[in-house]
Length: 58
Image 1 (cartoon, rainbow, N blue to C red):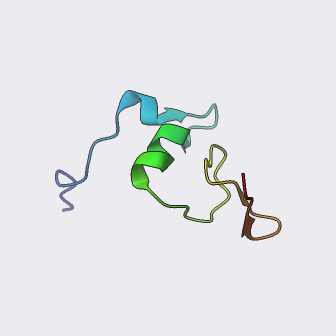
Image 2: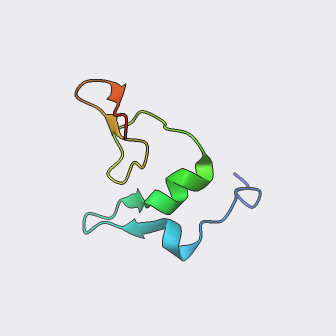
Image 3: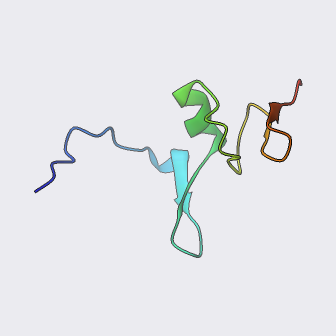
């Protein structure tokens, strides 16, 4: 049996559920994490472009 009690809890403004039932992380969550995971996240504050594999300079 798995024990997930040691996982950090997400604040309500760090994610939302998509109509399909997926967890979608907000910009606040990504900034709190502190780095780009290069997965092409919908709310990426780092400007990562999954098509080019590069971070856009703002």
